[in-house]
Image (cartoon, rainbow, N blue to C red; front, top):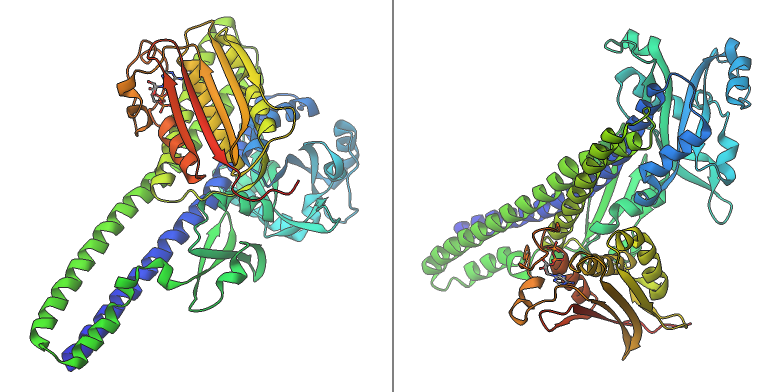
Length: 554
Ligand code: ADP
């Protein structure tokens, strides 16, 4: 009996440990995603500090807005409300400063040093009220700014009520402000004293907490977990299913982490039976039952220990594979994508003449570098999606979407590419709106891949035709080109991972062989279908069918 009980406890510990590992794995990805989002935003801020210091003279508002547009920040971060700069001024110099920047500093205070917002873009609505605001006058902001100043690193405020923004109901919204310091040009900043002496201002970005967290975490959601994100016991974001999941045999785990100076608690709820398969979870009970019945005790125990060991080995192997996938995911996003995005921004700014005049020869080289970097980013993104797909981390976030709008905006985006290749484009879509219930981001990705392939695999001056139509219980979009075509024996190959099937153009155009594999998987995740037609010589037609899964009320 003693042996049975020992086996019971040993097995139960293994199961508990396994459960903790799965939850920890999930939690570490959640933190990585928030961190990743912040890191990319931080890169923008350092670029802003660099821009301010690259110029001998004060920047104009236009230059700041150009920098904002160039950074692409508004497309990448759903929660970002603005990119700003606050400059430090001694109170006695305030009136000169107000003249120079044409702002009125507020609120009144006795502080001898002020840090006033002089640029904030987009310069819209309530954002305009922020110009002239002395950020040092607010304790929460000042605390993060001082930390950034003293360490020469990025720091974020605790969630705070944003001055400029209220939500649709007019209620004030909670947000974060992320700061990086800007020191006087060429001044020393090695020691704490030097950093305090030479601080000149702060470049910052403002996020609304809810939008920022939901966009950072959107791609990770996994039905088996639900979570709340808290700071100082204040709930900033909660998944829609959070309350629902707290029923039955649920467990919870709070995992804390500090990101850019802010302590986040992420509270996960889950049902253990959904995390570990029943066969593993019921192991401890099986041990007990088998022991108590006593039948062929010795034989059973030997079998049990061996099978347990086997299962443990299998679990270990599965965990190793998952770990490897996770680190690939993390490496791809942090170590490759973030710096590559930084390169794109910096090159973009130099090309725009923000660092001085660019000669024709220099422009030529810079443009080549920009294009190579763009291709590199595309490949990184493809691999990143592939890793997420393989790890089961792509979960669709479906809404009612208007196909025509997506199609036309995509065509607009790809217009330059189509023109550069002298292709003629024909688009046909029903006049009446056509809706599907789908993940907008993913549908865009599907169509973008098909269109970009049609452009790539069609020699200059070709014809591309895109047709959107209603089809039984859903819609069909076909992308037809007059390109090199696909042979019959290649029609299955092209949908496999890393399959770059040879054709007369495949050597001269870039690609990773991942696009169509992703497209097929995404279409199938929507319970749709993709087909290809081609006689092998005269162009190809890819057709995607997407069902209207949910009854749509119009
Ligand atoms: P890639 O990054 O190589 O373009 P894809 O997965 O998108 O990867 O496509 C896989 C292969 O399918 C391509 O290498 C190409 O040989 C073929 N292919 C895709 N689209 C077309 C098309 N419109 N016309 C001809 N061949 C195509």
